[in-house]
Figure: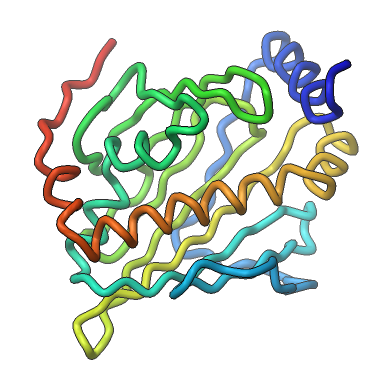
Length: 225
């Protein structure tokens, strides 16, 4: 018997084949309006804080994370935009970059298509770097995939002691109206929160050890067709 989230994603996959997706854009740096709740989201990794909130308008789930990293800003910025780091952090999903920039560092306007198994379903997701202000900020946004839309903002704030505070804001919308909102409340927001926390924990470990050298020394791939 298929689990509820597999049924939801299966229905969504069929829907995506029948409807041309629209691309949603948000202004860079636009504030989250009418935040109506801000609740703790369980125990964090050391050096990490987070909260989940919903905007009043369209009930957009937004996951916010803060991670303190004992490493310089440039190193943290480069690790966060590295395709290779993402592949390692998502190893449990079988995630691979299959088109676009498939290795090395991503920059302004770059795109990548990922193939991975999430929630029991193999999916493809294409994202593009839609804002880029090195080494302090970038945004990646979904171009095509399982969500109605998502924007992932990354900030890197240098601290007086030479460390970096990395901040993430991941805002997404699920398709299928009421069914999508039920999916958000029952499992999808929690799943995405855990996925991002695990990614940030790996990035922190790499930045604070010698692992970052191997991860950042790889070649940058050409953009495929």
